[in-house]
Image 1 (cartoon, rainbow, N blue to C red):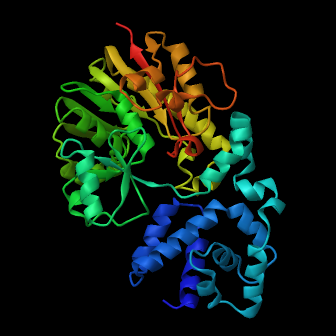
Image 2: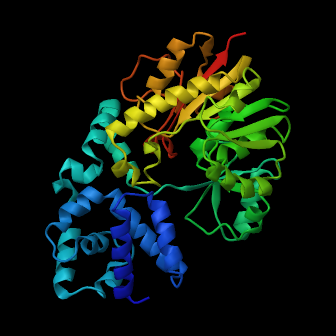
Image 3: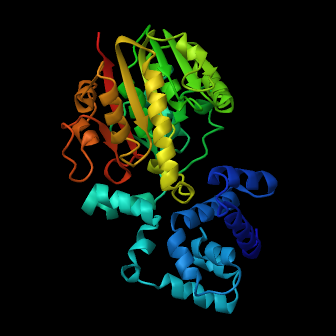
Length: 429
């Protein structure tokens, strides 16, 4: 595609994603369905341009003030994911001079908000949590996330899948903490690989894999993934159970559970039972009260731990949204806890960075439910022989209120994963 046509397409895609009325990945996918003539390289350029605008929106909007023409075009020019010489073939002389001037601005001359590119309310909360680590986190959140796979150990060993990928020219390294994971070099296409089609692996961030590992589901048990969504953790739990027992995948969205079906068919699992429910008090949940050995609650949250892959979330969430989410999280956790039998394990998790969705919800649940004994997560992970388990549970900033290792806290700048939180309880006998 000619540079001018590609820049025009990028301008239109930027215009659409900046409306912020739908998730960016859905907007990009719809745009590509409408533009079927685009090739793989053109799609990659357009998608990366749109995501770059969302990641550095405050900086690019600041720089765009000095330019001329449509705002979305100026933003697309600044973020254009291609060599500058290619871009300049689409520009006027004045635009070339302007883009050169923008590129020449020294980073140290930028204001803090143009370096961290976060909304003020979020930057303030994260800085209060992390102190001197805030800048490192902000820088990490401006990068794209790596591509991690979870090997389906029900079917193959991690080493075997790594060797098969290498034979296809795809380099990988074992994930540092998860015994199931491979981290790929780059972002290769995977869906046409035989290993993908036969269910030998699933795309899943290493941090998400650790949540499934922490549940420690065993053969023959009755287990629930209470907010299963499209089932990434469900599949990991089912494989850990060696396809035995009964694993219920609950979710309020039948549409999300439908996305689990083809993945389930590839996985070789037959012990998974997807169930759409209306809410945490659904009658089907009540009938199963006190019958489960283990329950995972990966609760709906702000998703701010996934900003490397979902940068639009920082512009689509607000403090009021977080308040509403906390109330929902508390209700879901309380409802799901009723499923556990005495001696059962409960894991509460989010992919949020905010303490009110994490430590705050865990503390409120513990205070209201003394029959649930908190477990030390670092000790659990150490018993599972995870390397550097204590580092996965270090508190944020100077927070010393919790016992050492009590809860898991994953940070993009510390651990190279998405941001995750997990707390674990055992129901007293």
